[in-house]
Length: 619
Image 1: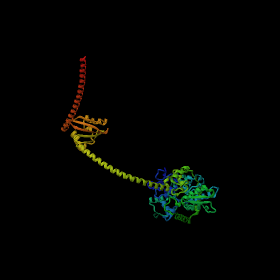
Image 2: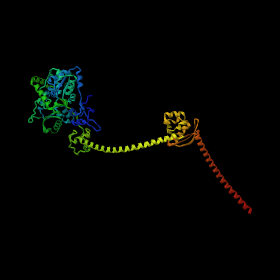
Image 3: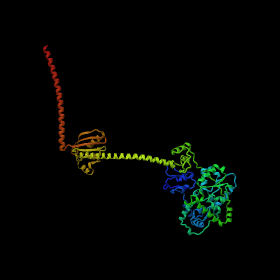
Image 4: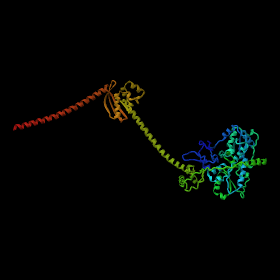
């Protein structure tokens, strides 16, 4: 799988959207719920605008240096095709012939200048434009231009000049000279050339495309320096006026085409904005313009993205022209003409493919929805263009198509930030009040905690003072609290445990008491019914136990008294004598009541007999 042409390194990206604004076809998008920009490679035309626009160098392009090094290690015949832009890039090299030797020193057997390929293609353009049959053409020398037509103006494909670019024409010459087995590396200022070479095979095949910065990198890797090398010239055939190709109208002069405003029918356009406008006007107003369009996406190849960043246009133009003049002073035009005659029969024709990447246009309702969200006027025809789109409406269309998100609009973003700051301020005020209330709550909580702790300490101290044994357990019969009297009742083993775990906290009651004893606790926990004054034998002791609920089914407590201790025995005897006296008194009272009631009935019966006896005597 081929590495994508354009790469974004998220770790360096500051999300400034410079790349999004720079892309002429919106192949770099920031989708909703996505932080970093993403390249849609099918939409990319390889112009390199994003690469040059990125302020943090987070964007790069496919590096081909390793591929070239691998080729050089194969001990095969390798040819280098050099773009005529080299004077604009390598102004630090005093003589171009030293530069040719530096290329050879890396292992290239042949070093050919693409200027001869320019001459061949220019000859074909002269034939095409001179034999006018009512059809106007767009030149197809610039990969970003013909790629833009294929992807975004496919209806103009038939108007693309059906001719290969000069680099491909040069490759055909090399293959004819040295055979199809020779490997070819193109070195030039165009990033899109890395994709263009995949279009061709056979005698038009170029194996790798390098940019000039990549070539400099290879010079460093191979430790090649101009001062250590002698002169060497390009392999023939040599180019003539093709050396002017890096200047946008250079190919027209090379072809001898008429650029006269009064008599000519060719217009030259260069640069990103002019390229887009030129293609639009060719599409919409060709019948009024009636001219062929010679279009270069960059301001001449000498300003391509595969050149070093710091070059100046007019200095580079001067260097290119000076180089051409220097070459032409002692130029063997007769030999050149013979080579042109020899290779002019090469098939330099080509075709282009409809690769329509245009997205469906969103309905008006959706566009208006986006404009309303951003607070823009209904038409959206105006705008600051800082988002990279012509107007707010164009931006709204891109948002609706999923190519952008509203945060990319500076005005909307600032408005959102102001609203966010306002909301944040209100939130901070509420938070400050909440924090104050929380501080008060914490103070009260600490006071309550302290009071609770003091109460617990007091309760625990009181618990330890009680003569009776006291124990609290949870639903799993684990001891929560106990006093010393309880530990004393359990015996020596419990006392040893108490030294390690004060109060036996966490100890299992089942391991400390016999079955009959701890079942009282289980019963109260499970049923919630208290057990009062139950006598239990535990080892050699008789214990009086009361188990009661503190928290139903969760916590129970018990008060236990050893009946064999003198003070408990005396107290219990008195209590039980009192209970017996009270019970006897109640019984006597009941007997007396019953006796009194019986005497009354007897008296009534006797009186009845006496009265009856008196009445019988009278009679």
